[in-house]
Length: 366
Image 1 (cartoon, rainbow, N blue to C red):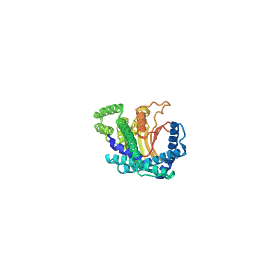
Image 2 (cartoon, rainbow, N blue to C red):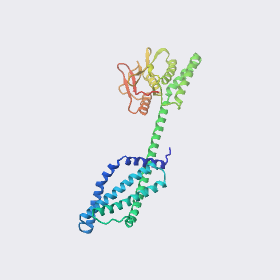
Image 3 (cartoon, rainbow, N blue to C red):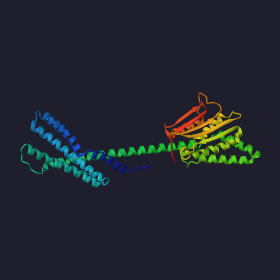
Image 4 (spheres, rainbow, N blue to C red):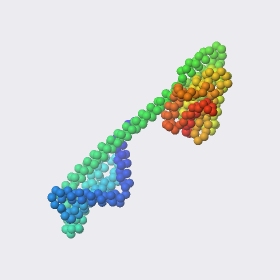
């Protein structure tokens, strides 16, 4: 993703200027008064130290007046120029002309105000237009404005590059998450494939119709698995179609030895849950819990609605060990939930009152 540096600079400058312009004119100048007084006193002390004697009350008043008026004019010139900059953002050379002219004008006004106020305070004669002071001041203003402009341009350029880098990192992280989810969703346990193909092979001669149905269901399940165009989240109804397809295949293998039950709250049909979330848990229950149960085995999938979505895979097989090893089914579940929900999920592995794996996730409506 390529971002225009010029566009980002304009956006950054506009944001900075909006923050400055949000300060009221009165507050801005009230802040300016102590700054001007402080600078004036500092200049007075420096001049006195350089001359070796106190410059007197008149000199102190003059320096404070000089600093306050200069600060007043500069700050207000910046305030006005930023208003102009906001209106004419992206005008290029036109903005530079307005920027420099407004700064020079502010300094010229400050010079005349200083002489006018000094003449009034000390009862001196006032002469308009002090060109000698103006020439030097214009040079100073141009230098200062150029330094400020270069600094703000460099700063906005650095911020634009930093934002571009952050956006690229966000995009890479999103792509990584999508790739990891796609990998998790496309996994089918090779043992399941091996057992299913063996079952089909044994049925071809004994019961061709069942073999055909099992082949079709297996093909359907793999189509779900490898379809990368599907979203990471699917409706409960779509997810249960995947589970039903998987159970249809396993019914051929296990026959009547295991009773498969699905109980889903109808109100949840259009709510979304992670794709291929339940099938690995069902496979895990068959592989580790029910494989040695001779008869009356039960595997039940429940999805209930409270303030969150509760998914439970229940079986009456071998209890979970205290030190539960994280096999493929559980590992992929944890990884998928972490990628999609962060910490906003809960997994409970229970043996009492009934053996079950329970997953609690927030609502995501379709």
